[in-house]
Image (tube, rainbow, N blue to C red; front, side, top):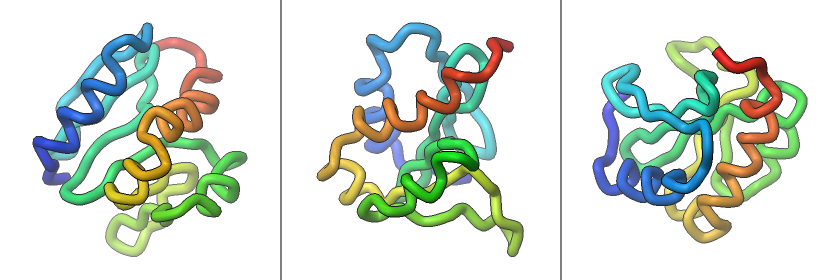
Length: 108
């Protein structure tokens, strides 16, 4: 997953005060983990959030959100959010939304 260094910096800044967060190189880009569980990531022009299957429908109602499809395979509970829409509605809001799911998982 190629990444956008500017979006990665924005994500780092938004996450810097959140406890339990670590950064990890994955899929050719960067992802952030919450207590060892994937929380979010960046790609060129968009952010990725792990919201879980129960919150997916609510997430998809938000501007710029769409399901993640890798090679014709839908990744349930994972969504892309177009960067401009995410930044307009609030990156920290999206992080908090995704943390509802990732924070509910047992630490790794």
